[in-house]
Image 1 (cartoon, each protein chain N blue to C red):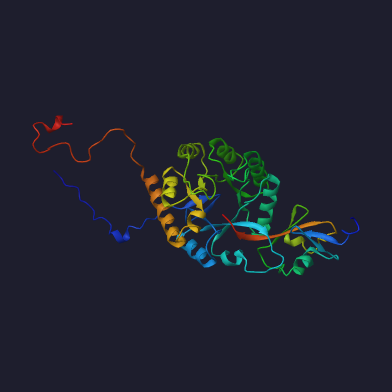
Image 2 (spheres, each protein chain N blue to C red):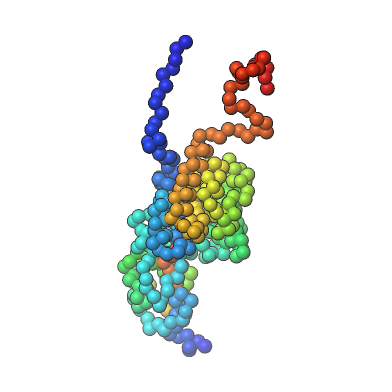
Length: 73
Length: 280
């Protein structure tokens, strides 16, 4: 199990291959413009401020949430 | 006898129903209506209905980005035109609600949050045991916390005391359209709290909005009543007018209830009476 997970991170509940890099690069890799307002990211249950996206380097096994506003009441 | 000069009444055209504004946490709002952005038949109807409602504050939820699809962000559509109030809908624990609020702050660059911590998925009633610590933590973290709460005066007062600049008691379960099920509690909340009271949830139609305002609420937050109406744009206009009517009635000071009649027409000089003054 551990070997299978060595390149895997969990993004929005789904397992994804991950070969390293910044949080910012990871976000951009999903086709999300990291410079556009309206997106926020949590790493292992903690919000990561936009200013820290470059310096933050997720590691395999991390859980990431990428969120945005949607219709709500 | 001197006759007092009577002023000409204003022309009906000039008698616009303009209600006073609302201030929360030092921020002035032109409209007392807060409106949700969910469940409209389509995006154009949503935009038109929000415009027709006159609301300045619109609520949004925070949800995961779909990684397989781009699409226009609600934020692009509404940002700049409205005051966007993110909610923590869908959260069942204080921890999740706090994280959601923090993510909303990052995404929308706002300290404001409509705090929802739900305790039961059938009624969507708030879980007070989770709500209060979540509110406390967020207030400490600099958030402007507008908590969705039960129609319980003690809870509302506790939320005020811990630093919430407004409280948002429910009228009835979210999306139920049942109106205000316990108007007496809303009145007591009005009397116990000094912060603005925004009735949140339960509105089914325009008259519910009027009742809320007549009970002394400072505003109303609704979504389903407009979004799921047969004609959302027209219903948005109805709730706007209903809110103005209710607010004006409240500030005008209603007459007290009385069990027996009190004649409107003069009791003196009734034709055919021997002694009008003794007439009953």
